[in-house]
Length: 616
Image (tube, rainbow, N blue to C red):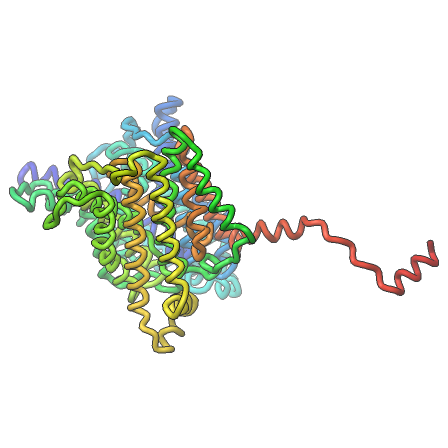
């Protein structure tokens, strides 16, 4: 074996070992609780920041700090999450869709909290716990994989673990301590997340967004193992890691060079796409919990208040008006989630990809760089971009035909990550690209008026999808898909309609957002943004267009301050609360207000009045 091949193999084994740790942790958590932990990467990031803070900022010895981080903090995070967030969901019936929303909420909350505590800037001084040579990491992975497999298959705890996942209530009836099993699973899963974070942090960008997304990309190894076999996950992870490392040796010339370089740098993303779109789905039960998408009647005058609030920025000036320009554009993007999630009841975690494609295609068309099409004025470029992006909604609509629940969530997330990595992050697609506003709407105030007009058109389009036969069919599919099929309705066509319409609205909003910022910024359409947008729309009312507008104003307004991350933290808290309260946090607030409201004393009966008169 040549020296280069040997060195690349070692580097690939090191990357694969970290991915294998992620796979083992995800599998154990899923086997113990039935939860696909989308917050795994965020826990890894928090632990990496904690270790760096103890060693670099406070001067602790490395191994003491590592012991505190990995043996106390990481498992503690898992136990707290199990006790406060996921145990109430399991006791209440274990709705997989509600646990998914809560898991995404935890992810968003940890990312936002990290941005508030440590800032958004990348850190390059994370301490090295294990040298770059992979042998130590491989030994840890081997011990964990063999140990987990033996415990699950050959011990009483393993039998209890399988019983809790199959039916928690039945397991409790036969004497299994389900809470202890779930807490142990979460503690071990969080330990592996923390170990992954501290191992990866010295060699990748340590920031609140980059590391969590990187860890989530290697989720493919757990999906490929069908969330069951840790040994299979280890083999897949090591194989992908070595293959990705070896691909760096190839340097073809011509048009294939940037594509091969992109594949070589993102082979785990390719594996995630294959695992999510081709392999059998994981967790195929309900789409979304009914209370998360049910339409709550808007309070009287709510639309009047919303109209006044959206017209109010016309009186702003300077930075305030420039910030407000983002609100109508983001509102259109979030309306796409109302169509897909609220009206169609489908989980879609990849809407940021369609918004980014709308902005990218608008910029390419306006610059005359789109293949086969001439240079167009900005407004015409936006319209053509919407037409071009809408059919791409089939990328997520097609998997939705045969998948639901966690399987659909993984498929849509994989598409979003794939578009981000293979399009937005590639210089051949975005280098030297700029985006201006339409003629006559160059100023912030003029452009804001144009945005309000386009937002009104988007609201009318979303309203049209609610009315008539199509609207009733979408609502029936959301409420009971099996019954819809039994009634002879073409459910696959309805799902494609929802996703294509959602892609068109997301593209329109993304193009508006790009023109408002006067640039195509790939970071504005990062997959993490897609998770944040999904959580915000679900917790604020996925089935009501008013909820999308409120979510847009909340996200832009909270992050307009000096420090970012406030919006993510607030949305994360609301998403976690939506899991603890069966009817959502806003219904809980209504119930609390009703209990606190002073009620008038009932009028006395005639008999009581006569007795009071005699006694008085």
